[in-house]
Length: 558
Image (cartoon, rainbow, N blue to C red; front, side, top):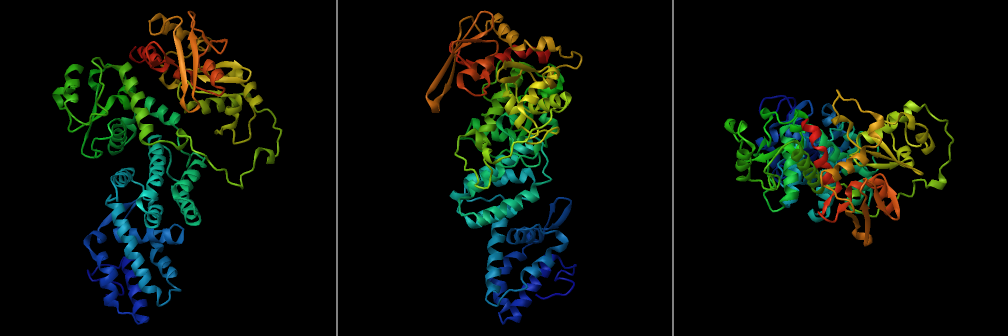
């Protein structure tokens, strides 16, 4: 079992071979029986599976080498690079006593079994198995040291919620196409916190990830994710395996009792691209994609929607394929995107989507502890660029006050560098897709997605300023809304129901006041920034957002 430069296969020694040599040399020098220790602890690591090569980043390495790198990272709390693996292990064992040799070998065997289950997607529950299979699709191994610690330190029922948080953070960032370059550092920081904390791992992971504000680590909100799923051509942006993951998650949220495995399913367009009923930007969005047991085939690619719909409805999964309308075009694609984006957020929820008390660390300064700094007014063009960036990633209907806009960081201003009065001074250069709905306090609403406006038709700021009044009037003219329609907005947890009424001229009457914007009316009613397109029409039990989709859809097919 002891080698110098070649192992028993006549090939150069791997770091794991050197580690094996070192351990048994130490055991023999301390008077242990190497054969007994080998049979008890090391023999399972001699299988072909452990010697097979796996890809990690740009490197191919043996599975056993990869395990020892993750194990040492978990034990030492620092990144272990491939060339330094054996050197770091030798330092790790330099002060090992005679009694600790069998203990260390037993620990290696225990963690190698955990690692084997992680890499083979073998969880102790169906949810854990699903998590591990999805992790393999995400193709990120930097989280492995954290998982080794969690799976060794906590039983399945205690780590389940922690794994869901990690999965939500990873999947949301993947869909948003955010960088993973800082994941190594973050996972090491999280590992240190988990080792020091006595509280459940869920609390530690939740607070750590929520406290990330930089682009390299923040947790995309529901609004940010929905904006991506409604507007971005994910068919061209994500790998096929990751699209299956997204659609499979949506299906699981819509049909929880169905089989969760989607790796063998085919990705199919609902509206075939060659029919050219809509631009590629719409055809490649989430709302036009589905999963089927197999491709529909060449003949179906030129078939009518009625024929394609019939073929699709005969198959599973049913969640993403249910409620397909008899007519299908750009309007229905957008409607379906909204529905699937909502199911995505239910499958991978953001913690702030569910009210949970958040404890503020004692070290965090309170507002009264902070020194107030008077800043000179920055250039108006920078303020306008800041406002444009803040609203750029947010969905239609987002309402923010000047205080909220100033508090958010951008490429132009960091935290604390902008004041509300600075935002107000930059109104002259406000982008055309934003609308001022209140002056005191200054409140701005996003009224359309700039990316969906044709370049050949530049926005006219004068027209866009009254966009929502015109939209409500369009809903009235099309019969989607009727004069005196009653609107309601419910807050079940507060046991409150807010009411409003649609005027014949498109204005909204709520709380004894008249508003030209639905969001201004709802913001006034609930006492905080709110998306007014969430008002529900009592007569139809549909939201204004549902109606707006129908009114705006012709823009995509024109």
